[in-house]
Length: 61
Image (cartoon, rainbow, N blue to C red):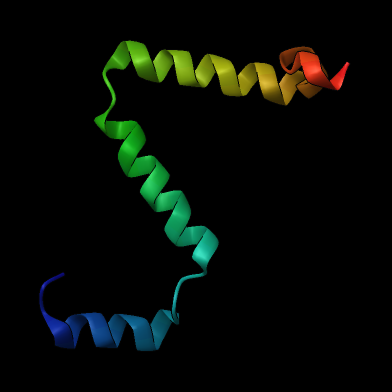
């Protein structure tokens, strides 16, 4: 991806990514740098929040 011509052609075909897409890729990159145990903890936290956000935050009760 260091080739500026390739990047320009790709952007011309696909358009510029949204800020949400860029942020998602940054989060994914950070997630992949975590140790496997930490990844598991993050996945569990997200699953709990997705199941019932009120149960995970005592200030919402």
